[in-house]
Length: 159
Ligand code: ADP
Image (cartoon, rainbow, N blue to C red; front, side, top):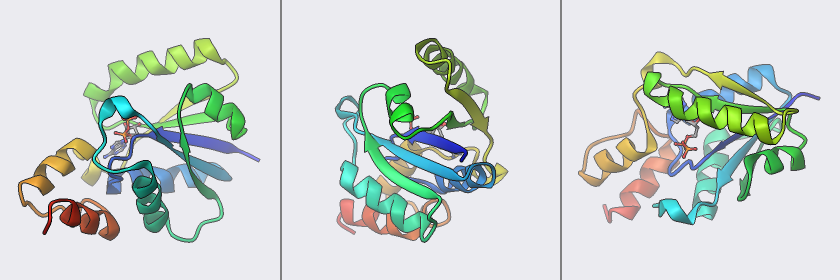
């Protein structure tokens, strides 16, 4: 069974993330979407809320599992028997950091391969932080995030 882990903050999930999950599913039997518990990043949404938003957006698919993790990604990969780490690449600006992370993860565990996937062109400019900024200023993000995410963003801003 081919298993991949797709880690991230997903604070909140966007259509770009969901697009990558769908593409990864074309290649892997199981995709473990791993939500980072990262208190340093001071997230807008709790881990529980992020898990819920992802589950809602993914819908019924036994091949996708949504989990939370902390600590080293390679340890989470091992725990879930994943042989690949999926990362999304939007633009050249993502590259340097992703390249460093991929090589560091290989240094830590050379049994896990990092694979980069490219989203639909419509989502290449999307990031969770930009979504939060636009939603916070009252702009519409309805074409850019799953419906449940839009609702929670509105609730967060009391609208
Ligand atoms: P992180 O804090 O790990 O960067 P994110 O939730 O921002 O977590 O992103 C998780 C993964 O999804 C990363 O590989 C990131 O490059 C990718 N990603 C984020 N937004 C998009 C998008 N719009 N299209 C494709 N991949 C994306």
